[in-house]
Amino acid sequence: MNGKNHNRKNRFWNLALLGLLPLLVAACQDPAPTDYIPQNVVTAYLIVDQPIRGIVVARSQAVADSFKYSNSVIRDADVRIIEGANTYRLQYRTDGNNIGEYYLPDTTILVQPEKSYRMEIALSDGGRITGQTVTPARVAWVKPPRALLQYPADTANLPSPDSLSFEWTAVPKTREYIISVSCVDSLEYGRYLAPATGEKNRRTSSVINQNARRRYNETTRWAFVQTSKLPLVWFAYKWYGLHDLTVYAPDPNMVEWFKQTRFGPNEFNALLSTVEGDGIGVFGSASVVGQRQFLLKNQP
Image (cartoon, rainbow, N blue to C red; front, top):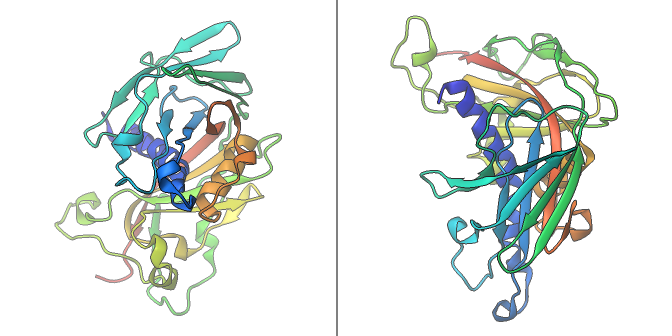
């Protein structure tokens, strides 16, 4: 697997797991864990111009049990994606960390823009879960982010972020966009220079990094914007070195569920679930455009 495809897969896992994990441990809210009834939870996003993959079907766990992600995953579901006259039956696979997904083995079949997709899941206990999404139109750069950035030397007096401005095409019917800035390698720095060195990576001096302890170790920052033109701020970068900046043009299903599970409280509102039947969760879609960046250190 090349680096580009590997990073795309990692972004898929970021999306899937960010929405799933708060729900799998939601049993902590129950006053009587011995009477807990598990809930089926689905996290499924279709990304335009990418293969069908990253669909997670799981079951929540009671607070009385030691949480283990691999114990939550449902591996024997019959998962199908339907578009027009085409029905695609997905297969289950797992990686070395026992994190599994349902995917379509035929990677030549890509998610198409502005199409209606239906998801049907049949569980071994007879349960059924369904969902529907309409994929957004494609998104593209109007003014792409700069590939090479120099972090300012004076962190107490940061200059106007004109060099960080970028713009993408406005997508019809999309009111909000999701932006992510992800550090690809928080350990290595010099290996990406020319000529390569053995210099290691380190964090930027962002005060946001120092204060936001709850997400201190996360390598990705997420944000929502309601415009297709944005001047990014230096504080968006938690490390120096290699980064991926990604813009998602999501459908309403994805943006509302992502808001709730990423930025909402520990409790979730089942009324915002976008799947029907014997489970809760999301079946959404998005168009994506990204840029690989390298952030130079402000000092050795």
